[in-house]
Image 1 (tube, rainbow, N blue to C red):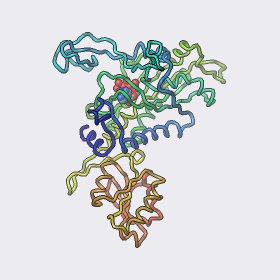
Image 2 (image 1 turned 180 degrees about the vertical axis):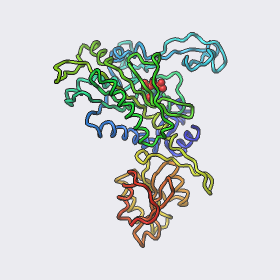
Image 3 (image 1 turned 180 degrees about the horizontal axis):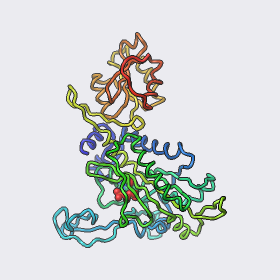
Length: 437
Ligand code: ATP
């Protein structure tokens, strides 16, 4: 973890928030490379779950919602963690994080646990009173449930169908930490998949497999991923069944994504509280039903951490250690780096022409500072799959060298074929060293 935290800072993936003021605890900012990586993760999720399916649509609902939403959903009453306080040093902890009922800081005696609600409260409008109290959403899911009828009537969907949403959520976690694993502000990628009651178990199993394979397809090693079934006592108040997709983080197995069968709990709660029917008319049976819902709920920040950790590799070579981020090409922040062999001005026109032709298509970087070897290393460390080197011979033969991050093999390709060759390699064509003519 320390190596990833330091690489993230050094290379511009992730910075401590408000660093010049001493930092805001457990808040992190995504730098120039981090923002690309996280966008690519969200993009892969959106493509897989919305664009490439005909049973899903997207939504972007507001973070601030009517306060009654959180009463109906059960969050005002039940979204709590047990909090204990040390009677001596007054530090506060989540009760289940304190092993021996003694303060982990000073060994002092602890208060009995009390319920601590994790929702952030604020005020809407210029008057700060009880009536103006609203919450920052602790999950994006409720924005989907309250829009169920809007989406159903405007998109004319038939069951089963799903609604996907990516957005910020906020939880006043008692013990945040482990870098971007647990923070108080984070981004979720959630699906509410509505099904006919009775088909829910089948769809639940379908989504378990689908979501597990998402991470594998994007390069997470299978032995670092597992599905864990929640025990009865662990199930949330709304859930009929729940599994976590867990990743083997340096601190142990941790949840990447939760997949729950929420039954008809949410739609029924909002129907009762709002007085508006959230149901579905089944044309086949001529019955009005309340759909069941399967919810795969993932974290964009936790996934970013998992992809970074899983991609990190060190290799011994003659200059010492080569650090390489073996990120899947779809996730790599920079897809192609254009590197003229030197800063010699004869190479400049051709190098910039090549760069200009590639940058409309992919996120690229142009780098002509320092030796070519050091520039390759820099690109390896940020996970760039391919480097294109323009040398003096290029001026004669109109060809350039492509270097592969993982194998460090090189091929020479005619410039006219460069974009199509890169496209093929970025979409997974094996890298063969040698001449490409
Ligand atoms: P945990 O048990 O780790 O607190 P949870 O079970 O409360 O998580 P869910 O409510 O299922 O989490 O949220 C779905 C996903 O949102 C999680 O799998 C995780 O990826 C992400 N997530 C939840 N809380 C946080 C947080 N505090 N920081 C970063 N990501 C989070």
